Length: 150
Image 1 (cartoon, rainbow, N blue to C red):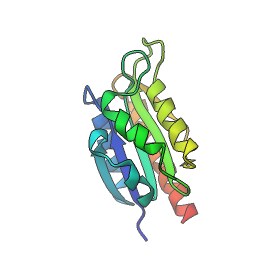
Image 2 (image 1 turned 90 degrees about the vertical axis):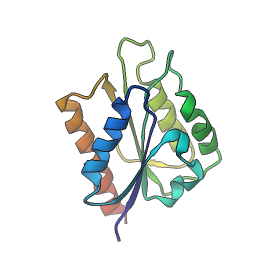
Image 3 (image 1 turned 60 degrees about the vertical axis):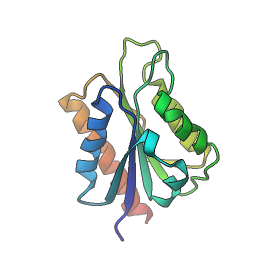
């Protein structure tokens, strides 16, 4: 059976949208993928997928993006038992709370009994070639986990 993976992103500058599309390119040959902007995503459908990858920027002083707030709040009432997840995103090391939004998203997914399949991946600014390789490795880890877990 082909696994399903939701890729949900928040992007202000376009970098995180590009990250989401890069992940989809690596996953599409091996899984059904659905890429959704976070303000259009429904947290209650996340458990229907075999895995979810959240991609977000960190706003201002370590805050979640405004467009992610409803999704984040809804996640607090969703049981993610058996749902694999990974979280990544572009931020800036110039900020005091570098990538804090991805930390908070990962914490929320874990608190709802989701299963992390890879460490949080933070990218400083626009993705470099090395960052794209790390994203490809994250995608591969998600697929490896799904292959061994299903």
